[in-house]
Each structure stands twice: as structure tokens, then as C-alpha cells.
Image (spheres, rainbow, N blue to C red):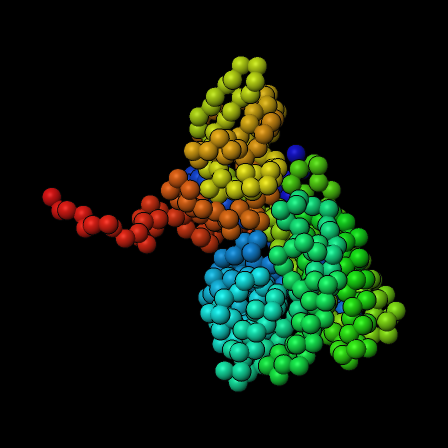
Length: 439
């Protein structure tokens, strides 16, 4: 078992993260419980930024907050002097509630509403990443009405496929995102944007996928984009001041994964952008990237309490926990894989192979298949690693299960940053069909 960040086994044989005993956390806050290793998040943020600084490259490292968006997480991103990507009015509202500098907010999304764009413009955010003509027209109308100018990046699909799961590919031609570089859409969008007085085009954005373990896709995308930028320089006298190559940098979930260090992604991206700018005699653009999962994914661990057990002779042994697809839908959604240990018996050797079942009323609610564990029993604490990205952000109330609390761990201190949802919270928006009759 490979531990991440500050995780280790303490003298009691318990899993410890950030200097805090996770078994004590389960007792204090209940389970399921999301816990985050803040030191690891800070370390990753610094690694991305440090590589740009060492190379003397002007850049923005923007946290892709869709991975995990809470007020505390956004404030942590601000402390590390990151920029911030949001993809909805809700994520923008969270950023505003956190006091995040609006000039460092970038707004993504393939179907932004009129209201969301008004919200972005009224708060004078740093950049809107324009995804389609419908949005471009709305932006021009709003800016004209408000007598203002908005900075934009045009999102393009360069036709590059990353080696990842089909459901999370976004850079190939057949994508719901962006203007296609091959069929003339991007040319038309750029021409229209340049001519619009309300639009200040900074440059281009692309995102080729997620959980990527090599740099080839980023290099090919940069080459495709510079070919187009060279054409636009000749035809439209446009020169990009910003090139955003997105995120998707992979992390290790299990021993099947072999990610490369954050610095290596950045170094090779810088080298290729320099090469392309020189080849086409263009100014070196500011480079933006958007790490999300790679900042928070392996910094998060979910703690569960083990409950029932079902042994199917000669077939499988099921061990159930008090959460499941309501707090981590990724295994059901796209067969995501995880590793886990017993937090209260972290040094015990495996004695059996079990499959971890969630408590939702779905046969597909399985968190981990074929997990080696010590013989486990009722009330043991299961720690599932690398749940920091898309666990809390995709959490739901299926079967009316309350969403878990979130705790940040740093320097032997635990800080509650999201309280556990209650049954009362879940029904507070419900309206009765008829008033309850008082007895």
C-alpha cells in the first residue's frame, strides 16, 4: 500500500493524516467522512507554480474547482496564490462567498446561462472561456447593455485524443465543448470576436481530457493551436497573448496508475510552447494551466464504518459500509478503482479478499471489487484513498442519505469545513402537498 502526502501509521497502528489519528476523527465527526491532507494540496500547488517561476515564464495556475468546491477550498487556493476556474453560477457564488479575487476567476462551461454571464460581468471576473456562438452573442449583448468590455479565451477542440476513459475525453473533434479547429468554426468565432468592440480576446483554450499520464497529447495540441495562430496572424493580424492548455494531469489511484511529477508536465509544455513560438516568429504567450484532480485527488480520503457482511460460498465475500454511491459515484459512473485499508488496524496483514459494497439500494453500488483486507468486522473503520476529487462535488442524496462532513487536516489540527448534512437539511426545500394535521 502506497501512502500519499503526510499519511502514515502511528504508534497505535492507526492511519494518521496531517498528524491526526483518523480513528479519532471518525469518532469525533462520524462517518462517512471526507478528510483532506492540506499540506499535500499546498505542496502540489507550489510544485506547479515553482516550475513556471524557475523557467522565468509568465503563467497562471488555475485550480479547476469542479474537482472540489467549498468556501474553505477556494480560500486555500487563494492562500497559495492560484487562479480559479468555475463552471457554473454556483461555483462562481462559492468563490465570491470565499472572498476570492475576482480578477483571477475564469468562467468555463458549454451552456452558460444569460443570468450566469450577467453575474460574471457584474463582478468583473478576469476571463470568460467562450465555448460557442450562442454564448458569444449573449456576451456581446450583455456587455453592450452594460457598456463594458469582457476578456475572453476561445475554447477550441484541436482534434487530439488523450489516453483516458471515453466519458471524460473532451479534446477530440466529436465533443460537446468548444469551437472546432478543423471545420472553420474557430476561424469564424475568432473573426467575430476581433470585430466586436465588447470582446477583448486574450487567446485560446483547450482541454484534451483527464487522468493523463504522459505529455504527448499536450505537445500535439500546442502544435495544432500554433498552426492556427500562425494562420490568424497572417489573415487577421491576431497574436495570442495567452495560451491555456487545460489540465487533466493524472494521479495514482491504484498500482495500475503511473503518473509523472507535476513539474514534468509543466517543463515539457513550456519547452513546446517556446519551440512553437520561435518557429512561427511569434511572441511567447502567457501559459495557463488548470490542475484540479492533481491538486486535491490524492489529498482526500473517505472514512467509512463497516457494517453488514454477506459471504457467498465459492463466489464472493461482500463487506458493506455506511456510504457508497451517494458520496462517491465514480465507481458506478465510470468504473473508477480505489485502494483502501482498515484505518484502525493499519498494520494488520490481509487475511481475505472482499468486495466493498455501499448501502444504497442499487446492485451497482460497489466501491471496490476484490480488496485484500484483514478479517474485518462491525465498527471497523475503512479508509478509501484518493477520493479528494469528484467525491464531495458529485455527492448526492440518493435514498435520502445525508452528504458527509468535510474536515481539513494540517499540522496536527483538524478543522471542520463542511458540516454533515442533516435529515432536516434534506427536506428544508420540500413543500407539502397539504398542511400536516396537528393532533
